[in-house]
Length: 233
Ligand SMILES: Nc1ncnc2c1ncn2[C@@H]1O[C@H](COP(=O)(O)OP(=O)(O)OP(=O)(O)O)[C@@H](O)[C@H]1O
Ligand SMILES: [Mg+2]
Image (cartoon, rainbow, N blue to C red; front, side, top):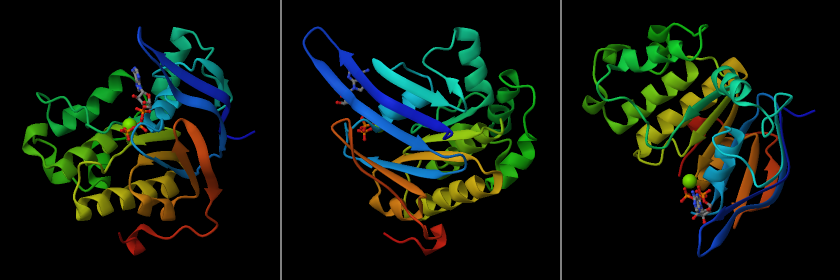
């Protein structure tokens, strides 16, 4: 069985006036350790898929199995356990706490999971050891994104979900973040799902999923993904 299995997953958002089919009967498999890129136009359902796999939201219908857990059927305790033990999430807008230092932003993960990596070595891993006492508002976008990645990784997640982690970054910072994510994916065999608008990133992925209007329009694997250092766009 694959690490992640979505079977006939649909998600409808209903308001008084309209119903939006954000995901329309999506089925897919992701293997352990895979680096997956999800691509598609704005509104195609990318964030919706991440939110469902991250158990931040529930599907309207269909089944989602992650790491042998049927996450649509877990009670609240088990859901919290799943979020704490299995998941790392990097949000597009960083979600750092501005009145805590960089190091403190990472250390708060200890409240969620007892067994975390050393926060300082995590900062070294993302190349920010000199910024541990800085505050989020003193950081550049790329640095903030790296803190958010360090915070997600310090819990040693089996599954890392990243929603447009380079959306707000320039070319050099984007390259740096993508290289880092790929390196950590390989080093820790951490299944990684990266949502992006950048078509170039499909070349470094093991698996590419393209969405359009809530449906999968392309799904393929790359036998020889290129190295991030060889990536240009
Ligand atoms: N909470 C919500 N209530 C109503 N509609 C929603 C909600 N969240 C998303 N949608 C709708 O569902 C569809 C898919 O949205 P989603 O956020 O998954 O798109 P996306 O591919 O992530 O787009 P983007 O690239 O702009 O981030 C869109 O039509 C969106 O308007
Ligand atoms: Mg989105």
